[in-house]
Image 1 (cartoon, rainbow, N blue to C red):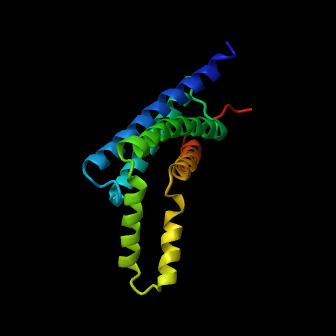
Image 2: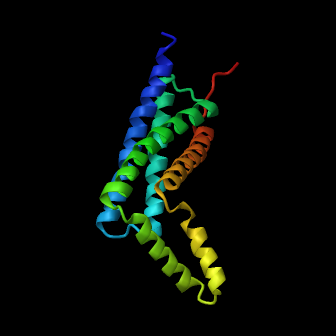
Image 3: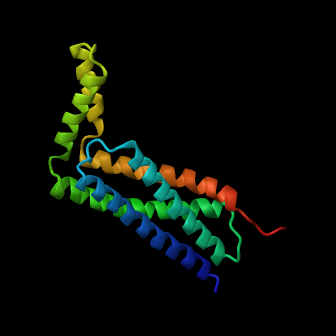
Length: 175
């Protein structure tokens, strides 16, 4: 019986992490289909953050329900990070496939878009400054770096969302 709460937490992390991972893939596919993959609109980022927050909060709510209405901030963070980790792993597998099979020229095309943006935003840069800016912009222009950054960002936002939701939802047994 003592093992059941851990099993429940793991199932919550797996289920809600899978939901969030596939939701992230769907958002990216929609963005790809509408042709906005290289310069996504800011509203897509807000929408993605809202979806992420909603799914993590529902996962925390389910964890609280399964624990007789109790949830500590620490448990909220652990559960939220678990959801974020599972989600990120699923999304990273998709991104790997996307970068290598669906859109193999992604990083080449992205470099061109970034170079054009730098030229338009900073027309008075010297050639040396322009070269440095383009080099900095291309720092994460490879699959490994991009997937690592995706994992870090996912866990960071999962931590922040879980912390805030945990503070709002916390309820502990009185000593």
